Image (cartoon, rainbow, N blue to C red; front, side, top):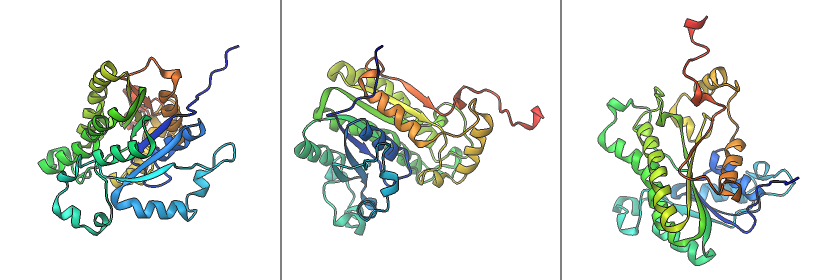
Length: 300
């Protein structure tokens, strides 16, 4: 009998977008670490001191514990603001902001070069970034600036990461991003241009899979994760109701767990998924397949 296992031993992973121990980025880091990978983390520049202090003080120790009793370790923690490709893109008011002023090298090109200088080539790139300053506004009432900010932070940032990291990635590398069902279905309340950004992200996944696959042999995939109560998701304002809806209407009649996303990410990054690219994999207990709400009053 052939035994299959997810083996990422010797692989170096950079995950952009970890800010605490609750989100999908953390779950992906933990899953890949348990599969043998070395984990490098990019955290939003204003969160750098808060995150590193919490990690070093032991606040995350319970979440760091792995199934074999070992503790999740990071080979490096780096500041990153994926809204900026190069130092000259950073506005003066941001440079002088107290949360940025004492930090250097946080633009995408600088982070890519620093990782290359310090760790050599990486094998796996994970985009776990999303933000909209107007996420509570309906799309119709979203400003042009708010809309473009959502696309810049949530979808173009993936293009930027790939553009700057691909020259520092090993052949047969892997890039992953995180999407959501609002890219293809109407989710009232998921506003501020975020639904548009997720749709763009999935479209870009397919195009980038062709471009970097053809030129570099790198696979590119997206995980469309179900509703989950992370810190970032709480900014939407009704995440608890979204989870209740999923529990009532998904075929598995429950909400997802973060480690399920982590496990799928580890699989997609492994040789077991060597023939998969340009794909959007739904990890939402099957909610995406449903065309009728089982808890609708009209069915009562």
